[in-house]
Length: 304
Image (cartoon, rainbow, N blue to C red; front, side):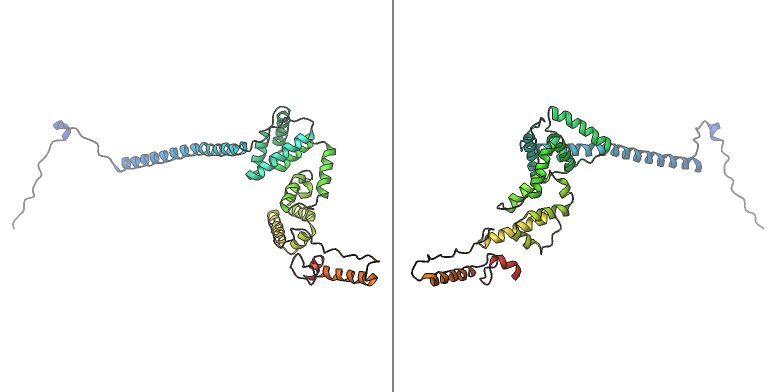
């Protein structure tokens, strides 16, 4: 039986005894702690960047708003808006308010911006008065809208007797010989003295229609109208159509009857014939709306 000898590894001396430095080997726990520390550091860096970005966002947003406000103010100043000092003269106050309304119609600014820019023109006693109103608004939470500003302004600078007169003018105001555009301009100016009558879009539309000429009212009766802008556009289209038909928006009068003196040749019979001829001639006047001769313009709306 043969035996096999096992190879023996040489015995080595400990490294410490040989003078070599022994480095500690990282164990599983040490590696886990390093990974956790790295993850925490990454999260910390991300949070720091988020905080920095959030801190800069309001600043940039505020800066953009300031730039927009400055540009809007520059556009406003190009209209050379008048200053307002206050005072007892209602005509001065009314002219100033009309100027502001005309400017803001052209600029189409938001209502709070209109209020801010309007009071920017106040000086002297008017500025002192507005500081009191502004404090009251802030205390009561009043909305910065144009209607509220106009109410405060009228209450301060237009005496009750003037307000009542302007309100009465608005209630009685009719289009008459004005164009639709001219009527709308005056309607808007007078309406500020009776804001309760146009407090909603529907009431404003109804009040405007009531003041239009009858022929335009009747043409609008079949129209679908939801807003004041639609109403104004349709009324102007009707007016343009009537002008295009040649009546200029006014009624065409029939030709006057020819009157023959009683003592003239032909006597009463001739005068009667002339009268009948005059009626026949008047009935043949073409309608100003459709151009037909089968009816007069006054009867057009009954025929259609």
